[in-house]
Image (cartoon, rainbow, N blue to C red; front, top):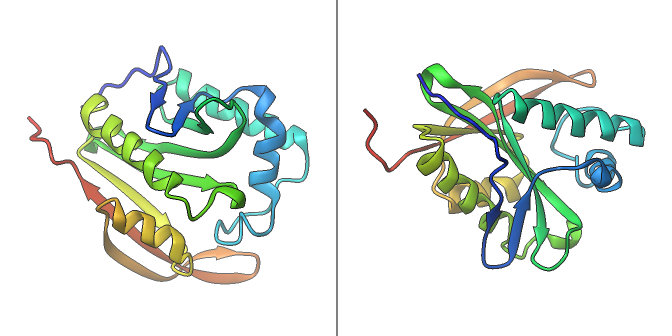
Length: 186
């Protein structure tokens, strides 16, 4: 069975980015990313209503890391500590060496390859440090930007579920993508 330990927090550094742990000082950015209509267009959950909700979300992320049930990185540009996005490995399935990846990016930074760069670093960490065998992504099929970044990172669409998710009075579809580790597992 998979055994992970996210302490100390693994800061990931890429050519342009620093992926760091969330702090309560990130609450305004977290609130924006969880409440802006354009950002959450394909997230299919109610928008955050307050900074208190953002603080609760940050605390949940910190608690999950401490309990080793998931890990979330805030995306920042090198030389600037302001959070511009988030990428996480959650729904950790230790028995099957699998986790789900989730991500969000501020609209000002979309279309610049930032999420792909962050995703490559997280995928490397997932397979080389955590020893995951596979990573899953569950997206709204209408989110073509998310589909493109997943496919660019090597994910394959494995399933398309018709009306499997009920939100806001409607049944919605889900597309499931998966990426297998290139490393041999024992």
